[in-house]
Structure formats: structure tokens, C-alpha cells
Length: 495
Image: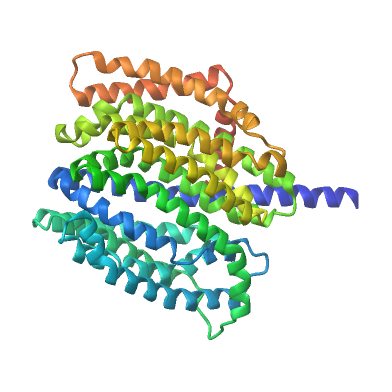
């Protein structure tokens, strides 16, 4: 009997590990291909369009992003976290979302002239109203997303996102070549979301039933409203710097600042969103066993930083060559911003893993408190540096990031017995090895070679140094990833 119980426990652990890794892989592949395609398209569009077009779209996105936070009121995460969510829960949220998003779009439609007046740019009115349609589409899509995430069916996301990204890319490039300017970016974004939603709707079996229960909705909202409030605070904060730059400085300044964050975000979006999507449902399934939640959190931080650190420091070291090769000289002023955001984004998995652990154990109240504390600090810093220069604002993000790491990890010192010091100790080897790699790679640009040759040498040297260093110093995460890949290969090969 004892042997059977031990085998069941061991089998359960293996199933959780396999399920987590499989869905992380699908989510990563989805993000990887989507971001690579989007990255290539953004390069093509950046060569065709002027920086001012990107500045205009960045102004509008400040407000559409804020409205997007209100789309599901935190109910999507509540559906994922709830242990016994059923069709009544999902259908109730779906119908609520439709009505709510129509109301949100109406508000944005009416407010468009005031937003345009704030920036003293009348042409923004129509752009805001067209791009705002994404709010309605998101309302239809969000419950399907929650269903896929809860049931760990991330393969569905892969095909929907891939098709949406490719088709919208064709739309964007065609319009840019035909001289539609900023509208190429507007229609690319809108068509991407629409196609993604249609395909997800076709491939996911769940459909809303004629069920609605206000009490169930209220129960979900009791958990979700705190995440909604957190999301509002976070989105307002994330867009505050762009709003201030757009108002105080020029659209071109905003374009360089925004483009500087775009490059590292291509990498971060692949890894971090994969972690974020998979961790919450997996941790929620284990929410009653804090030791398991801790182990998942720890493995997530160690592995993701091992991957993220060399990519970010590598991009930071090769920034000059990357911009010259990919975007041409007209974007060279975004290089300092790119380097700053690389260092800042490098630690994003620490934020994601800690916050998902807090959400998974049902402490959305604690999640909200953390957001309030972080944003008070961040807003104070942004408003203080806004009148100095755009560059000083960017550097202040590094300080805010370190403070936010400490704040996000603090509750898990007690909830999971996994402190910020423990987390730093777990990733220090990956960070140090990445820094050494960066110090070796950076001087290569001092030789008077063509940018394309310099970039090729830097990438090759960096990859070789990091892999060889991982083997020489026996970095545990290198062996772990190698074992995971080898574990999947025979299985996939035989299917």
C-alpha cells in the first residue's frame, strides 16, 4: 500500500511537471513566432514610416491601454483561480463582458475629442475611435482566453496568434507601401486582434450557454476587483511616462523612447508572457500545498533568468550595431533608451513569478496593496524627473525596478518562506556569467568593421562564451534545460 501511494505521488509530480513544461513550450512557441514576425514587420514598417507616425500611435495607445484594463474587471483571472468554475461562471462573465465593453467603447468614443484636445492634435479623434474597437473585440475574446488558460490548452493560442499575426502583417505593410502612414499601424493592430479572436472562437469548443447568475458573478468579482484595481494602477503607471513625454516633449522624443523599449520587449514578451500565462493556472491547482507553489516559483525564477539575462545583456552590448543594421541611422537616438530598458526588463521574471504565487494562493488583496505601494514610489520618481529630460526619466526606471523587485518578493518571505535574498542567491551565477559575456562582446564594436559584420561577431562570441561558461562553471539551469529538451525529444520523435 505504501509503495502504491508513493508511486501515485511520484506520478502526480511528474504529471504536473510535464503539464507545466508542455504548456510553457506551446505558449513560448506562440509568443516566439508572433514576436519574431511582429519584429520583422516592425522593422519593415520602421523603414517605410517616419518616427512621427510611431509617436502618434504611442499617444493613442496610452488611452486605449487604460480602457483595455477595464475589459474583464479581473474576472478572467478569477475564472482561472476558482477551483470549481463551471459553465454558469463562464457564461455569466461572457454576457457581462459584452455589455460592459460596449459601454466602455461608448465612453471612449465620446471622450475622443477631449483626448485629442489634450495633445492639441485634432487628427487623433478618428484614430482613437477606430483603434478603440479593440475594446469590444477583447470583450468577446477574454472568456475564451480564460477557458484555454484554465484547462492548459495553450496549443490553441499558438495557431490563433500565428494566423492573426501573419495576416495583420500583410495588411500593415500593404497600407504602409500605399502611403497610409499611421493608419497602417492602426489597421495592423486591429486586424490582428480580430483574426486572433475569430480563430480562437472556432478552435475552442466552449460556447456561452443561456445561463446567468448574478451571485456567481459577484463571487468572482470579490476576487477579481482587486486585480482590476491593480491592473488599472499598473497600466496608468506604465503609460504615465509616455503620456508625460508626449505632452512635455515632442512626438519624435516619444518615438525614440518607445522604440528603445520595443527591442528588449520582443524578447521579454516571449519568455515572460509564457511564464505569466502558465504559472497562474498551474499554481492555482497546487494552491493548497505551499511547498509545491514555492518549488514552482523558484524553478521559474532560476530558469527564466538564466535565459533572460544573457539575452538582455547581449542586446545591451550590441545595441549600436543592432539599430544601425535593423532600423538604419535615423533611429540611432533610441540606442541609449534600448540599453536602459534591457537592464530593467532583465529582472521581469522575478516580478512575474512572485506575483503569480500571490495570486494563486488567493491573496488578491495583498496583490493590490503591493501595486499601490510600488506605484506611489514610481509616480513620485517619474513626476520628479519629468522636467529634467527624457533620458533622466528612462534612468529612473532602473531605480524603480529594483525597488519593485523587493516589494513584490516581500510577501513570499512569509507565504512561501522564499525571500528576496534567497531569490538573488539563486540567480547570481546566471547574472555574473551574463555580465562577463557582455564585457567580452561590447569591445568588438570598437573595430572599424561594417555594422552587419560587427553584429554577427558579437552574437557568435556571446553565445559561445555563455554556453562554454555554463559548462565550465556547471550552472545548474544549463543542465536542467538540457535534460528537459532531451526528455521531450524522444517522446516527440516517436509520435
